[in-house]
Length: 144
Image (tube, rainbow, N blue to C red; front, side, top):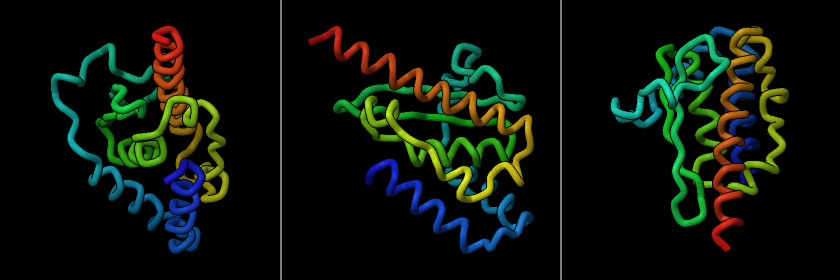
């Protein structure tokens, strides 16, 4: 699926919650519970996303010209937020991640239920994922 198709799917899922704050927060935490476990060995200082109030660990590797991310967080809501980004960016090509227009946050009204601190952390997660994409794209270009 394309990045836009995945975002549209997420928007559709959140629309079923009809803007209910409590249900939305619960749903985000539920998404985090479904996130595949990250190896404890990868939960290191160098894998922490800078700019997040909660601890968020993020790793990336290139497989078949697509980026595979792994992530975890020490808080339920943040883990749910990173799981949304994982769903969108995982197994995508570096250039698709770099060119992605992330519009789902506005469409689901995310700013209403995550607050300023988490918004900054969420932006830091996106930035880190795009930095990985940039690094892999550059690496591919240099290898040619």
